[in-house]
Every structure is written in C-alpha cells, then in structure tokens.
Length: 454
Ligand SMILES: *[C@@H]1O[C@H](CO)[C@@H](O)[C@H](O)[C@H]1NC(C)=O
Ligand SMILES: *[C@@H]1O[C@H](CO)[C@@H](O)[C@H](O)[C@H]1NC(C)=O
Ligand SMILES: *[C@@H]1O[C@H](CO)[C@@H](O)[C@H](O)[C@H]1NC(C)=O
Ligand SMILES: *[C@@H]1O[C@H](CO)[C@@H](O)[C@H](O)[C@H]1NC(C)=O
Ligand SMILES: *[C@@H]1O[C@H](CO)[C@@H](O)[C@H](O)[C@H]1NC(C)=O
Image (cartoon, rainbow, N blue to C red; front, top):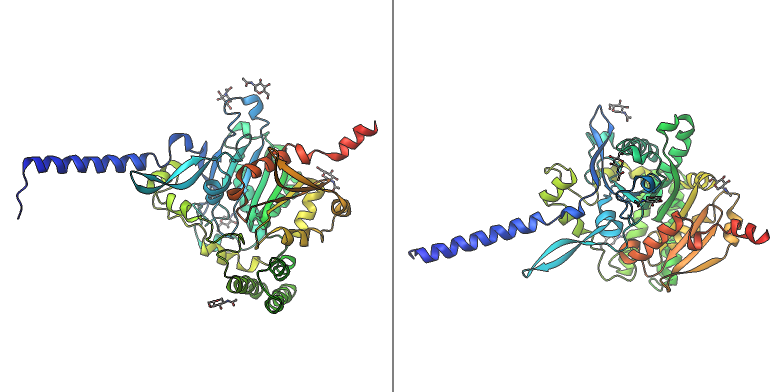
C-alpha cells in the first residue's frame, strides 16, 4: 500500500475543492437570475382536490417598469400540444426569452441558456401554461380528474387564466391573445370559444379580455386533416403510387371510424396512418421532412431535471418532469378525432384568428390546414379564398406568405417544420407581432380602401 505524503494530501484537498467549486458554479448558473420568469408557480383549478396548473410568465422586455403602457401591453398565452406535452418545450426550445442548448465548458458538454433573439416577449407579456393538469409540472391530484374532452380542458384553463389575471391589478386591462401549436389546434379554439360564451354572463371584473387566437401547425379538424397525408407525401416524392394507394386505404378507415363516432378506434386508425408513413418513408420525424434527426426537445427534459432550476421555477424538487405525459394522452385518447372546426367558425365571427404553419411539417402542415379552412362555414370564407396571397419579407429576406381577409389570417413560414419557431425564430416573432398589432401585411385593407375612396 502506498503511503500518503502531506504534499499528496494537499494536492487531493486542492482538487476536491476545485471539483466542488466547479459543481457549485455550474448548478448555481444553470438558471441565472436574469433568466428567471417574472412570475411562476401554480394556479389552482380545484381548491378541494389541490389540482393546479403550472405557469411561467415573462413580462415584456420593453415595458418592464412603465405602468401606463404596461396596462395596455398584450399578454400572449402559449399552449403546447400532445395531448399532454409541456409548454416548457415552447418556452425553452421555441419562443421563450431563453433557449436551452448544449455547450462546452472546461471540455465538458452541458446545457445552458442563451438569450433568444426571436422571443415572443420582446414587446408582449408571455405566459406558458402546462395544460391540461397532469402535464409537465402541473398537478393532477388523481388521474380521474384529468379532463377527457375539450370542454373539460377549457373549464380548467378558464379558471387558471382568471387566477393569473388576479395576480396583478395591472393584468386586468391587458389584451389577451391565446396561441398554441399542434394539439393546441384543439385547445386554443376551445378556450377561445369558452371565453366568448362565458364573458357575456359574467360581471366585467371576471371576464377575460380576449383579443384573438393563433394556431401554429394545429390539429383542429382531424377527419379532414387525416385525409391529406397520401397526396402530400406523394407529391413530395416520399412515397410511390402503390404506397399512396395503401395510405389512402388507411386514411379512409380513420375517416370511416370518425364518421361512425367510434372515437377510440378512430384515434388508433390515425396512428396507423402516421405509423405507415413513418415506416415507408424512413424519415427521422414527420415534424419536418428535411431533418435527418428528430428535434432536440430532450434538451429541455434534461435541463429541467436540475433541482436548482425547479426551485427557481417554484416547483417541488420531487416533481419528475416529462416532456409528454402518457397519462394525459390516455385521458384524451377518445378526444383526438373530434373536430373543433365549429369553434374556429364562431371565433372568426367574433375575434381575430391566425392560422400559420411551417412549410416542411408533414404532420400538421400547410396542405393539412388549408384542407379544413376551405370547409369553414363562415360568411367571409369566399372573400378569404379570393384574397391575394402576399409574399412576406422580414428584413428584406423572403420569409413566407400571408393571406388575410376580415378576421382570418393564414401564414406559411418557409424553411420551417412543426416546431416553427425553433427553425425560424425571428420570423415567427415578426409574424406574431405584426398580426397582434395589425401591422405590415396584417393592416386592415378594408380601412385602407376606405381612405383611398375618400
Ligand atoms: C373539484 O373537485 C370536486 C371533487 O372531485 C368536484 O366535485 C368539483 O366539481 C371540482 N370542481 C371543478 C371546478 O372542477
Ligand atoms: C406600478 O404599479 C405597481 C402597483 O400595481 C407599483 O407597486 C409600482 O411601484 C408601479 N411602478 C411604477 C414604475 O410606477
Ligand atoms: C410610458 O408609456 C407611455 C405610453 O406608451 C409613454 O407615453 C411614456 O412616455 C412612457 N414613460 C416612460 C417613463 O417610459
Ligand atoms: C411500422 O414498422 C414497425 C416495425 O417494423 C411495425 O411493428 C409496425 O406495425 C409498422 N406500422 C405500420 C402502421 O405499418
Ligand atoms: C370580425 O370580428 C368582429 C368583432 O371583432 C365582428 O364584428 C365582425 O362581424 C367579424 N367579421 C366577420 C366577417 O365575421
């Protein structure tokens, strides 16, 4: 056995200290002070059971201390899809002020936060909700309490949003925009519709000041959308004619089961369509047909394992974060194929609606959205379909296309997949800002024409 000399002891102590210091340094800086949300924590949806929705709110970067303008600054709410996927993916991987990414420090790869130049809170407040309960850091006291349909989802969301507004007297007057992605194509119309129906029967102080809804790459009218994969993939050159015929057969089966109201089997039939397409194309992900590897959403999962990060967000250290909850997905299994198109039809008559997609999403992309939009029962539809599709530039560079008429806007974001803002952050920011502020291609052309006529 080797004897330990005092010098060796000293060296050991020195390196032990160094390692401890480094561990301390990396955990303490995992979520630097400037990256903390303005507010975060829990919004109870049922005080009897203790179920609560987790939220993270980031105040607008441009009006942090000015109450006058702050009381008019819009608040954008973001709802992730799934069903059952956490909005922390939207926050830390898509549209939040800080995005997580790997980086090398002392030759060790670790995850760190970087400021997001395309953040949606540049000039708006930005609120992420882990919805429905049981998703992400949200708490479902029992699995039975997790909503099994969109009415249940909307009821909880309404309570949570009302509770959020009550957190600060300055929130009361602020215009609220509800946005989301993918299965958010169900949630966003459902909470929007719920708000419009509830507001008139509530005292003014309990209403939600809804000013519009926006859906990115959404699933809204599944019966129509499930019928688009064969043609879409065929014209992209991803499947041949024989495979197209096979896929059309699977699609027809999903549509037949949906029409029959056989909801669980219809959901499974849609999964067969997607599974077949994944198998025969060999694509890494249907979320973006250009990608050779899936989106790196696991970075968010790894980042949120850190107890220091959980503590800073107001989450109990014992909470285990999952990107998507199987329990929530199972609770909403029979909801998947149910259409909420009628809710969008109601919304477009009463507030403004933006539908936008990344051009390279093969799951809920442009063709998929246009296929149901043209079926809308809305008096403005023909004017919308006849409207010009404008070429859209950001800083002089081609960004996509925008078509607008009355309260309905449609935008295509080029060189982007399902996680549109991950691929085109700054363009997604320009899009949401212009749409909310009625600027750029979203100016009200009707009013322009009136001025010209005068
Ligand atoms: C809260 O939970 C109780 C017990 O399960 C239930 O009776 C009640 O309807 C729930 N309230 C809401 C608003 O969901
Ligand atoms: C803004 O209003 C809050 C109360 O809602 C007050 O505490 C704060 O001092 C005000 N800030 C400024 C900059 O006026
Ligand atoms: C606060 O906002 C109002 C309205 O936008 C503006 O007129 C005013 O100059 C701002 N004040 C400060 C101190 O930024
Ligand atoms: C896709 O491939 C897997 C593995 O070969 C197979 O188990 C699955 O049944 C296939 N799915 C469809 C829908 O063809
Ligand atoms: C657009 O929404 C407004 C309410 O903001 C409504 O008065 C108007 O009728 C809607 N337009 C159409 C064509 O539905």
